[in-house]
Image (cartoon, rainbow over all chains, first blue to last red; front, side):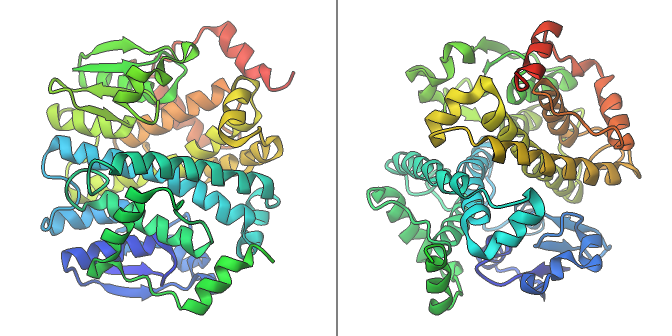
Length: 224
Length: 224
């Protein structure tokens, strides 16, 4: 197997790498540098018509994309430590939290990124004709609402889907770290959510390898 | 078990009902009329803090929300006919297609709905301060792109995730029918996608019970 991959801060490839570290899985990583448009090359579009990474290439030549789907597949090959749930109810609960995080947090974070950040102006123009900056900024309200909702939930438990670390936490962690890269932070008053972020951030799998200078540049770029 | 539910055209409750019909599952349906804000009542927020339907209430009092997570749970209780995949590779492929449909089609359809339709002006104002109409309209480009991508995929197979009807088709079908309700149609040139829509629309599970007058009113409302 091979994983077509991109380095931090790209959040979706990182999810799979965090998952692999938690499982102790070793898969060949094939760099697919987005800055060089490697994900839009004819070779890569044959692997994933959406032109995205990560993509897992199986030994029979099948290509699987979508970070969570790749992790689901790897969970079946490497069941322990379990990250997607041990019974029907826990599996559904983890899946529910993955979806809540993706629709309530990841989607508006992506809209702030695409519609307000100078790094993505060309992408927005190509796909939608322009950046819609006021709309992009308004997504911060949605993100703040999601943070407050998650904070209330994490008041009574240590992890998103219950008492243990699961795929839902990986999805949230990768999204919050990417949000930080683009200058969107967890509000100070969300103490339970901040405590959760510190808890998952202390795990050996949590490395977020973005040089400080690049982080500062990305966080400040929007203001200039 | 009970399913807190809303009638057509609401796309997410409909997914679970299509799934139940395909499986022959009978669960008590509890009406949760959105027009009367039943989904934002304190009772319902205790079931789902996001204030959405559907919600499945288990006999032990647990509440599961998110349409796809509810269906995943029901699949484990009622494995046949299989709709989420028979082995690891098929399960990952179906999951990948569910995600592609939700992020590439359902999300921009939702943005057209929230940001351009008069029926949702109050919701957009409450959550984001206003409707961003130009942004909403620009989502039609994303939807058209998704339709063309799906059309190319369906040239070589009858269903989204392979040679048989699965949960990916239910997710796509419910989204396209809702899109039609708000006046967003599959482009005429997408003949393979239109043939797929006719194929899944002919199944007994496909009933979309929206009175013609209401459909016409909703489709035309944007223009007035």
